[in-house]
Amino acid sequence: MGRYIARRLLQFVPVLFGTMFLLHYMQSLSVQINGNPVRALFGDRQPPPETLAAITRAFSLDDPCLNQTGNPCVGLFVDRIINYSQGDFGIDFNERAITALIADAAPITIRLTLIAVLFEAVVGILAGVLAGIRKDGVTDNLIRITTTLVISVPVFVLGVLVQILSGVYIGVWLEDNGAPEWLSAMFSVSYQADHPWASLVIPGVVLGAFSLGFIARLTRTSLIETLRADYVRTARAKGLGRRRVVGVHALRNSLIPVITYIGIDLGALMGGAIVTEGIFNVPGIGGLVFGAVARGETPIVIAVVTLLTLVFLLASLLVDVLYAVLDPRIRYD
Image (tube, rainbow, N blue to C red):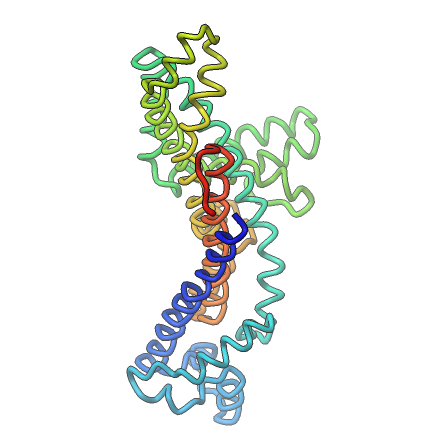
């Protein structure tokens, strides 16, 4: 297992470099085609040439390669790699360290993602198991209809509807009836810094709702197929109870594709939280990226996407390790 993990970690290097180079080249090409992005800071006003030159130089936008359309600016890319390896992601247009901006926003998005993953995994697997062991029954049909509805509703529509229901109706009712502050914060309209976990429960549920539908249906399908396997029939023939057959013998193998999906979805949730964070006014990574895109601050976008790529790679490695935990027959060495 140790050698396998070491090989996978080495494989991270070309993937990270490839992602960073692609983002870097897109940024360079944008500057080469659209011109100096620093001019957008001043709007319709014409900045003094000295000020424009100073800011351009501070962001390394005065390199001659940026005047040549199609030039990949390898020198700037090498400088970026060196700075990133030292933990320096540069500064934004307001001269704030991007590292500090990410450090402030990341814990909020991590909490939001953990709530979403916990919700989708627990509820989705439980719903899938109930549907799988009651195939074509009332419970199965109800779960399939519900998950189809959840999958078909866009996250921005679901988010607004849940926000209105939880914040305007439930939240107001709780406040009027003297509910505890943490409970009122859980059903608030937007994020509250005084309750960093409670106020993220509803946004986390909204974020994880879409994946919950897929997890439930995937668990159902995998469990139904596993229950037909020979070793499950053998376990039943030995007189083992239904709970032990399903919970110990069938469910562990059924969860392998589910774990794969959750691992891949972990990185997708962190990157896809922009809409949810925007609806509930959550100052996380999504809000940081959204603001950076609106202002044209590509250094922030490149830094965040690079970190999200690393998170995605680590999540995929964790999934592979969990395979061996779920199925002892799987070996990597």
